[in-house]
Image 1 (cartoon, rainbow, N blue to C red):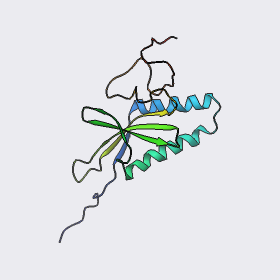
Image 2 (image 1 turned 30 degrees about the vertical axis):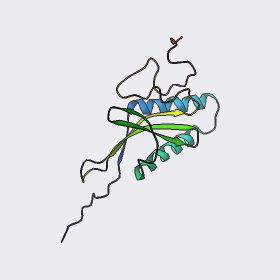
Image 3 (image 1 turned 120 degrees about the horizontal axis):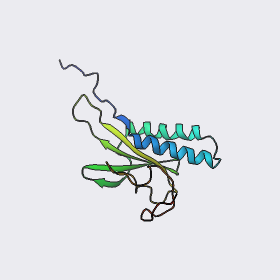
Image 4 (image 1 turned 135 degrees about the vertical axis):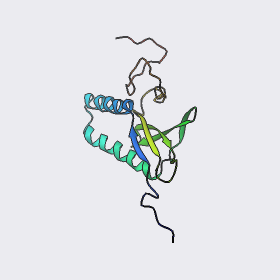
Length: 139
């Protein structure tokens, strides 16, 4: 008789990088400062969409590749972009991992520009700006 494993078919774990939490907070601050209604409901909607990735992490298109990392883009409510990397399971005890890298507004100019592995730009991740990244920042 073959014993069944209780952890078989485990879903991937969602892991938020610090930069992703910062970018979500910056997005919500931006929306709240402009008087958009109910930023808490928007945050919950984004988090629910991210949680739904656990059931089909490969459904979103790949928008960038760095080394072995494939950056995917989840579109939430046609206006919010969530960038993540999915790492498949490495054995029966793991369900894999979904690493959330950044959350941005779709109206951001080139929203994928600041989503990189291990690199930081002169601008915090998640900052909404229309300036070209080659222009010097003015305070």
